[in-house]
Length: 542
Ligand code: ADP
Image (tube, rainbow, N blue to C red; front, side):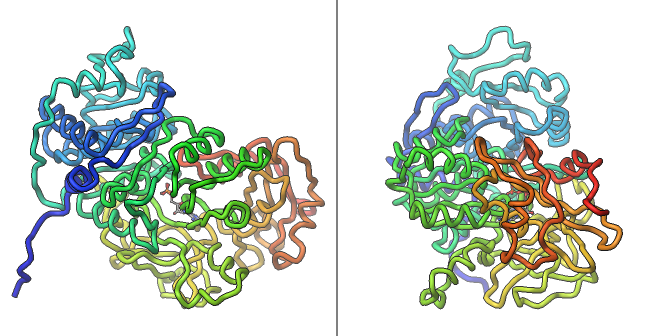
């Protein structure tokens, strides 16, 4: 016997329809590429999203055709999120920090038909457009009077003119909720990039889950600043969860420096912000010397790479802001775990609570996880045994776009490539990417743990731990350190800093000071590049 409830597909258009009808006057504020502040409401935004849908119809785009963006977080990008997916096309957000060759490669692989770009990326589009053979329409996200003349880009039109030709009188189509809605290429540190292809159903379920109290706790009382880019993994789903709850949205545009982000938080009374550790490091670096405080910020979700304990403590103890440490990946839409305490932890002393908050958190309903050994055997949840982390759930990839890379699943589970422990309460702690684990004398050393300790030293801006070949121990850890401007420390001082904080054999054998640690397109440390940089390095005594 089937249930007798209404059957309504979970479509992305439903989110903006809801926001328009029930939170029509909630604000969306954007710092524009032009530098000024733009503000309007969900109602205005829904109207323009429908104009996008009509404009795509006018271009004769088919269902599932790909529309690419090269854009910062802003209201026009938000309209494309809804207009493109809502009308049945697939939004392909391209990470502008990728190499131009890679951008051309993925635009061709995705068979993008349209490219919408912020004017900051005009030089990039000028470099790649001739190589993007499937793109027929180039649209600059700007007013008509800002449209560059003689750009060399064929038939370039302004977004405002493109939309201006449409009425916005349009009914969102209904279709199978399993239809593709958006796509995002992984950075492809090995081989060509592969695309996660999200569906309306997976994105809507993820948006529901992301808003839960034990996840990002998003509500109509929030003003949200997603610093995490809309060009990578849908800004962690925030553009969807915000519409689902009617929260105010504040978009930072291209101004991601500490001062701009801090000023936007204060000016727009932001209560909740989301970003990777490097962004917050810049902001705290701006605030501390100036003695600045937050007046409205309550929580921040930090993920994308391990959040150093020193940062969690600084937010918590110095600024009264709760840090929600999150773990996930492109293939997981991206949220997998988020760290909030359980009822039984209430009575714990503050130091014990902090030990839990430093972990990557527990699974969100919808995500199941397990750790396995090299033979695929499930390992115990004791908080000590570390293993390869596998996940499954309705917003986790089944396969990549165009079956690139073959079947990624193992008995229905997706191997994340991460290594970690899970404790008896289900809290995950990531110790490494499997390729970065340091194997020393038959034991594993967590590079993240070694880095976290160094990051608590006042003179350390960034630290990366990598394994170096050793004749006796196979590998030994060394630490590459970038010093904070105007601060000094020495190899000896840093090595001493480890004493009493970790087992002796986990202390790095050496410290090398570098000007910068190479970062990838999503702000993660590129340890392969660092290893190349240090290829002539020899361990002391090795
Ligand atoms: P995202 O851009 O969402 O970080 P990517 O697919 O680019 O997604 O990267 C995912 C990888 O980033 C994870 O597999 C993991 O190695 C790392 N990562 C993400 N969050 C954390 C975290 N909180 N702690 C440690 N590593 C993390």
